[in-house]
Image (tube, rainbow over all chains, first blue to last red; front, side):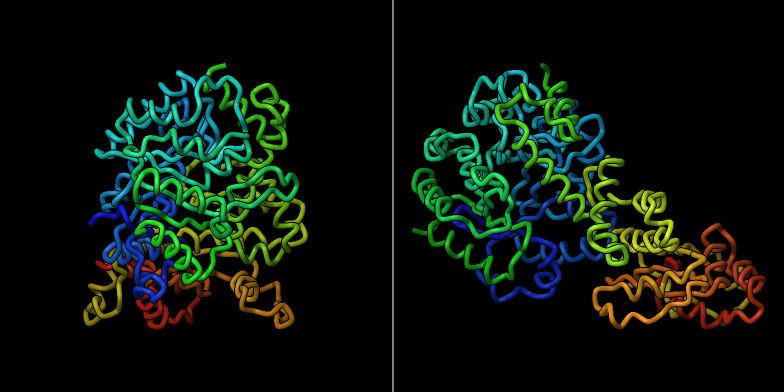
Length: 276
Length: 249
């Protein structure tokens, strides 16, 4: 099944039992769902059983948040093995993680932390991505993160870094349009121009989500995934689809998660853009 | 600066010294604070999800202080957050707030037992139908295995009652007075998709622990009778078979 014209939603624990029991009306036209891999890396139990039931009815994307592809100390082999076992279990349509790091000296910092875009960083990330692809025996997609800090010492911009990472490893890209907008606003670059510099053929999946302006510093946007997709992000999405053609798209909502019909309305809006 | 040095500096900065990365990015302090808030909010929510009764007992501000202290003291060393909080009961027990609430540690242990039970390995439980009880001698020589989801928590305090009245569905005004001198033993099991949390007698807890340490069912029942001569063995075993205490043979 081609998912190129398909917009799905992120599968979160708030909706797990409902979707595992029956295909809810709101998701009648949901062509696929995506999980956070780390939420299902357990020995057993009801959560995994519900995922098994859902995976029988929907194609599933397997999105990791903790492979820490940018760790200078390399990857956590046990974690790789656990994600690999989950991949074997649910046979996902996409496997992805972020252009970021979380782990150093054995401590997991539970966020997607920024990398300086240098040759040395490229060597490290490319080696890590290649090891993940070897371990999983499949291609992965790498997602552009939301950035708040413009690390000095970067010798290239993110689109160029991603392009070279793809050339070095053969990975694909997961383009998060909201993250492009949030990073552009926080770091002062043009999101529209950024998008023209991402090679269309490398993008296999698109994420859409909502941000929240910082309460203390309203000039900074925070990638909270707790809001509807913003109008500016919809505009960028439409421009991207016009530029690149339709791409499998996902509505992500990770906090203050609304009822399924609210998510479905966002999904339908994206589906209209995809089939235009 | 190498990437590893940068990552170590970043971690130090997140641990409370934002000046450490001032040279690494313009306007670093308030921007780093966004990452710090994301990390702390995520981990506090993880602890709150695992320890809701504890949070209700101490109240939101005290729970926030406890979780902040734990996050600083014992940051996650595992990428899967459902494992984060294993040492939280012991951490809480060592804090000043536990001095006035001596049962806090055991309530937290009970909540962690439920967390582990939820994610434990799947294996069919032993039900009464699959055990031929007609031959009493054969039954008593059986060496059962405790189900991977099953856990027994013993306390000198009435932890099941305390835990039960601190569930979200119990109104604060409806919480009855609890006699704090009662010791309670609780077994957590997962017979189907649901976690079962039920109080058992000391004799019954002794039986389960004896099985756990390798005793035959007969020897385990003997140990239970050693605790209480009036131990209702038939009823206790029936409850274990209904609630999935043991693994299928």
